[in-house]
Image (cartoon, rainbow, N blue to C red; front, side):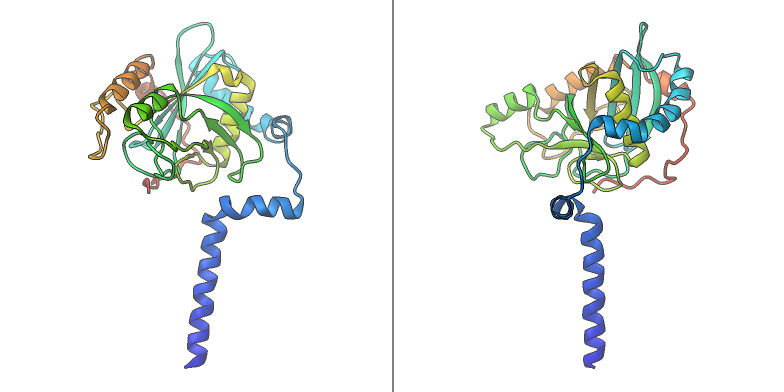
Length: 261
């Protein structure tokens, strides 16, 4: 009897340790780096390591879109319901759809991020603040949340502690961020580095507002309509027919995408 109890306890501990190793990487990995003395990487180090292959994977899509690489402008359209990121770019001409990336993991539901710890992926128009070559999720790009609109609405509502540290990153797990897998983030990291962060815009929507009305969550704030009108107007620059008519490289994409937590 005691042996069975011991085996059961050991099994539970093993499962818990495995789960913490996978899902708690954001907690334990920074301490591991400090203790083990893992050297930090620069953006240049990452480009030397992954840039050549990432560009080789990107160029066929850019060639098909008729946009020279690196482009002058980049737009990343993040659709939470559809669980995808649409990559658009432009050179000297109009915006052209390049390809899409699946969202392997994110958290929350339709609606903007309101406070620290609500596990929400924000919604709105954002910049890429910087590239993080030492992410615990392979590589990452910091999204500029909160933006001016987020702060304005927080002041109106009397909210403080809006949170931050929202990233687009690798791996297939996330809390409040957008995980696009390791190959995906290698390509996007390289693209943003080559194009310049100041030339990149990010539009995050609850769903693709070009093809229907917004999904409004029951807990959405009263000003969410204003937000979604702004997001819809920004999406208007990217005609949906280009995406529907384009041939997307789906190699490496999962057959069934995981649902948001």
